Image (cartoon, rainbow, N blue to C red):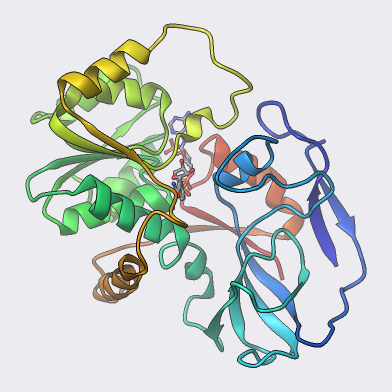
Length: 336
Ligand code: NDP
């Protein structure tokens, strides 16, 4: 049984001392438990936050503990009603080959589901994040201009495609020409601006001739600063993530953007609302998501791209890639 534990809290981007691969015996199952073998491990930006010993919506991972993470696993043996060997399940088992579970917060996906790994992405947490954040906070109206960064990733790609379904003009922001081509050609956004290009802010301005009505905040940083002057009166800003700042060890040097941010919110009467997907929306919104997303996928109205990484030992480097934008699509590790 291989497992990856948090060895040391990182200062900035995680390095080779942050995570450690260990080998242990396969855990023994007691009564009222089941043994799970991980098939796919999801890699997500929030994992960087769990490495910090800081107050957040979730407890930090303790030093020496297995890194937290959602997985799709297969039941190996079970002493639990409702779970039989071979079942695929969605579980929070973390970065390891095998885990013991008493069934708490484990969802049975059956044997075998059509696309097991999709439960970690488009049909799971990131997909639901996009759906609820955009529709419940962003409140997009037909004809609105919607802007979203990390546009080729699971959240941003889904935000933009749902906004298109709702009749909006959608402008994505992504890092590099390949990602931008994917965002417009495959995902059907109206435009995509490369944030690594010279004059990024001018390009964004040109792509939003009617200003911005919904800015779905995924990244913060220079993207946010370029968006601010383009926001229309009564614009909505669901604050989903600020990944460009997750590796900051403290406040950065440079100009103080506080006045620009708060001044814009005030003058343009912008509605800004943060949310954490686990507890910000009622259960009925989740049910609506499953119904709508299943339908859109079946009809081909929503496209989904994954990047599959081979092997648990490759997960630490892959997480770093994700944090600096070297991923392309939803990052999932094929573990076993
Ligand atoms: P992605 O797979 O899209 O990966 C993150 C992407 O962020 C990178 O691929 C990169 O895309 C972009 N990025 C990284 N650094 C920068 C930078 N300095 N400037 C601009 N873009 C950057 O991630 P997800 O779709 O899984 O998540 C997107 C956001 O949603 C994250 O902030 C995440 O924390 C948040 N989130 C929030 C949840 C909530 O409950 N509030 C739940 C789930 C996700 P590119 O190369 O295109 O710039």
